[in-house]
Structure formats: C-alpha cells, structure tokens
Length: 218
Image 1 (cartoon, rainbow, N blue to C red):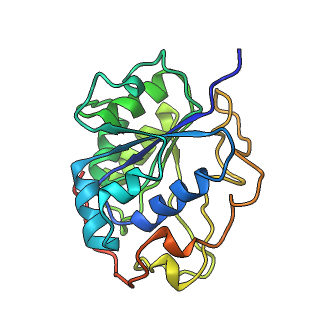
Image 2: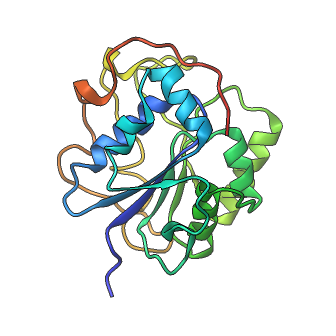
C-alpha cells in the first residue's frame, strides 16, 4: 500500500524563519502533497520579531494546521501515515527534547512518532556557535535516526542570517537531500519538479531586511 503524500512540518522558536517560509512555499508547488503544520508558541513570537510575519500568514501556506498543545491530533499517532517530518528551524530546546524522547507538545510528539515509526526526520538547527550540550543532542538525535541538516548557502557568510529577499538561496532539504518519500532511511528526492531548488517568491516574506535574532524560545 502506498504511503499518503503527507509531510509534517514543525516550526520551533529559533532564528531561521526565512528557511521555514521558503520550505512551505516550495512544498505548495508539489502536486498532491499535503503539508501538516505545527508551530510552537516560541515560533509564533520569532516569526513576528524576525520576519514581521503573522502566524496566520504562515498557516495559510499549509493544508492542515494543528495547535502545539493538541497532543490528541492526528500527527501524534503512528497510525497516521506520513512521508516524514521536517523541523525548521529547530531550536536547541526542541533538538534536546527530540534527542531524548521528551514529547511534551505536539511538535516533539510528532517527531517522536516519526522516529519510532522509522520515518525520515530532518532537523534544521541554525544557531551558531554550538555549545557542547547541543552537539551531544545532535549526536543522540542522529543515532536515533534523525538527519541533522544545518541550512547552508554557497554565498552566505558563516555568521548572521540574511533575509532571503537579499539573494536567492537553495533549500537544502529537498533536492537532493534526505529521503522524505517512502519510508525507512533510504535517500531519495522528495520531488524533482521545478521549485525544489529555486529563488524565493517575493511574497514569501514582507521584504523588510530584518536581521536574525539570537532566539531560542522552544
């Protein structure tokens, strides 16, 4: 039986929201793909502070939206079949919770379910430099089956997050990248159609050049 084309996207309270916005807009271009969105309260705050974007605008980019407090939602159950999950940005707090199996909200519960069902889980931590606890959590999460995928841009300076309106950038988790199509840990392209590697749309964010904040609000 084929796996339904559903992808869970989690946003936690960390700097790097332009990457989340670009991913959601990219996923909308893939025919037949359902995006199931979970945002923590910290994520909603960082959206406003970093890219001056209201949560409602982000929710409109997804097919299904869940409250982070709703531990009875569909994505909290392993019987709800999905292609996998991406957490972008992944805060240090969320990373640690995923690494050690602490499922205290819907985002971390969905990540826990993704791992226990052996589905692909991609974590996108952006904050640097990385302290030892975060490095250890990355190792632990990777050992549990997650893919740790820090965002990258070939022309981007290593420090500071530039607004995507300033220059085009590649979303690193889609093509090529960790498998989010099918099950297991196999690597494959999520999609090959136009838009998986692309310049961001002008309406992806508000166009203001907000600098990244050193936020990690879970």
